[in-house]
Every structure is written in C-alpha cells, then in structure tokens.
Length: 222
Image (cartoon, rainbow, N blue to C red):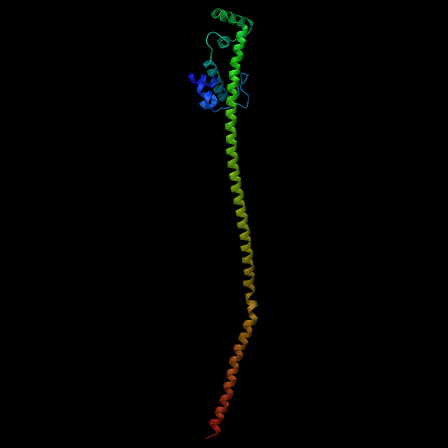
C-alpha cells in the first residue's frame, strides 16, 4: 500500500521535482467522487467503483497513528444504522481506546482526510483534463488533415471534370468539323476535277488538230 500513500502525501523526492503524485504514478482517469451511493447516469458504474476503490485505498494508506476520525469512520460504516445511538456508542468505544479523544479532534481529523481527497481529486482532474485536451488536439489535427485531404481531392476532381468537359467540347467540335469536311473541300475538289477533265479534253483536241495537219502533209505532199 506504499504507493497509495504517495498518491496522497508528496514525498521529499516529488516535492523537489514538482511532479504531481498522480503524474508520478500515471493514474489515467478523471472521474469525480460522487456523494451519492449511486453513480450519475453519465458515469459507467464499473469505472466509478474502480475509482472509488482508489480513493478508499488511498485514504486507508494515510491513516494517522492512533485512533482518529478514519477509525471512527470505519466503525460507523461497518453498521447499517447511523442514528444517535450508533454514534454515541462508537464515540464511547473510541474514548476507551484513547481517553484524550474529543469531538473537536475527530472533526479536525475529518477535515484533514477530506482535504486530502479534494487535493488528489484536483490532481486527478487536472491530469485527466490535460489528457482530454491532448486527445482533443490530436483529434482536431487528424480532422483538419482529413478535411484538407478531402478539399484537395474535391479540387482535383473539379479540375479533372473541367478538363473532361473541355475534352468533350473539343471532341464534339471536331466531330462537327469532321461531318462538314466533305462539304468544305467539295468546291476545291470539283474545280480540280474539272481542270483534269479539261486537261484530258484539251490533249485530245490538240492531238487531233496536229494529226489532221500531219495526215494532210502525208497525203498531199510527195
């Protein structure tokens, strides 16, 4: 139980380091102690029982020498009836063990134990809040990274969509041009074909004229 005492009473070594006792022993929870016997709806009952056990063992570990409030507390807690008779009997029994014990001493000791619980509760709370803040920071960093990746992906998709739309427009334009290309080139092709036909006809006519003169020479000049 030595370690539990260190959770409630700072050792000389911890006093020098400035490290809270809860940090030194790495208690991971941030669960407040409830004054009720039943846990609040938002707290897991098993978790609450575990933490209450930590506090009970911690208080037990700092039980002061001799008969004090904590011994009185255990005596009262061991019975179901907490009326005036129970307290009177417990107090008489306590005085039989320590005749110097007074009500004022019990109340003073009670304040001591309560202050220790409050002190450890504060340390646990600070540690828990620190862990929650660290997790929240990591969560937000991860969310921001994912959001940035998503935004980058969406921008890339939009860019690809724009490129795809441009390509589709270009393809449509070229298909329309392909459809009209015969009409576009038809006048030039027709003109060339007319010249080719005229070229053939001009050859025939020219050769016929030349042959006619050639034949006249052959026929009329000897």
